[in-house]
Length: 265
Image 1 (tube, rainbow, N blue to C red):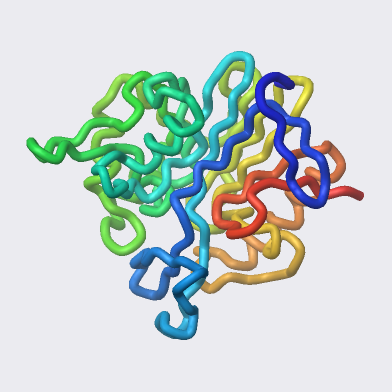
Image 2: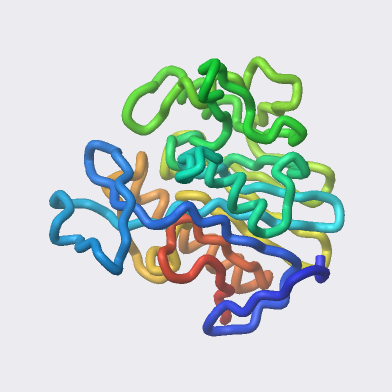
């Protein structure tokens, strides 16, 4: 996996194959589950509603010798030119969105799944945003999203998934193509899953909202917004310890300052 661009992530050098954060920007979110753009050069948290959280919305691209992998799909916002921001981010990195081979979904909350599909501005019809990729989604998480359409889940964004041949509905724990391991964790939501990409040379861990920010990994933090906050806290500690022992690179979807890191013993 050691080909392509190298990246420097403070406080250590990370000589990884192309791990590309695809940030859609910083946002605040409150109890209404509305995501409002936040510019730290002109906005102040004091002006946001009480209890608002500041988060990055940051899917990742991981390019291996076999695949161009997209990990979660962002909010699905469009830029000023009407282009899906996630597509634009890929184009800016010199990657054709149609070349993505796999989309790995940790869960289907709207801030992670909004870019799964895109609506045609003229016809109003929806299509998968990455039609040539194979999507991997937990079957029970999809059922749960349909049953809980509302603040956190938006059924219209994921409604195409069971209707397309290029969608694999996973169950439990397993392995894709011998090197992408997935594990159902629960915690943040009942059927949340995480991914470990291990090509025999490098190990890249994507914990979705079980491991969303480096600060949460370093503290015994129980979040009220988690389905099972205590379990999620325990999982963060378990994965940090495993990552230390096995030399994982962690990808943080919601961290506003540090998208990747390793934890050293």
